[in-house]
Length: 143
Image 1 (spheres, rainbow, N blue to C red):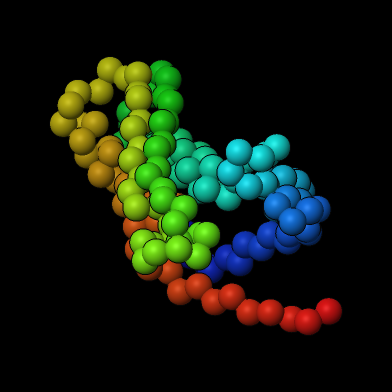
Image 2 (image 1 turned 90 degrees about the vertical axis):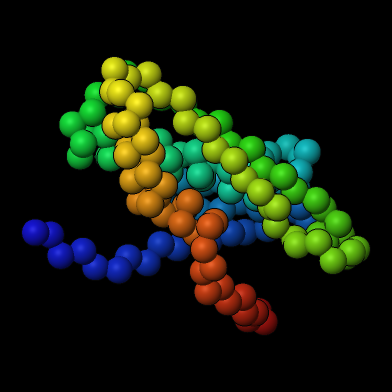
């Protein structure tokens, strides 16, 4: 049995403009912009992160179950109201709802697919972070 340990994952963002940021994630650079800007927004990346994570976990779970996946796609949609973002009203700042649909081409039967999806949802770290409160602390450091 493998003894897994906690991992710290860190990204570092550098401001390019009032709406744009370049973020280093490992050996990769990601550009983030406002909604409708020149690059995906943080809200887009949230949905993209869920889609990517569901793909990875779906593949891992299928392998664990001995299930063959011929093809897979993930569609993620979120309902968002910018009211709070712009300092108006009392609605929450984040997504009100997120829906993901995994389209899978496989010869597995419905019962197997239901068990597979249950495990995918349970094991997906991004889905877990979106569905459950995660302690988040934002601090500042004056330069």
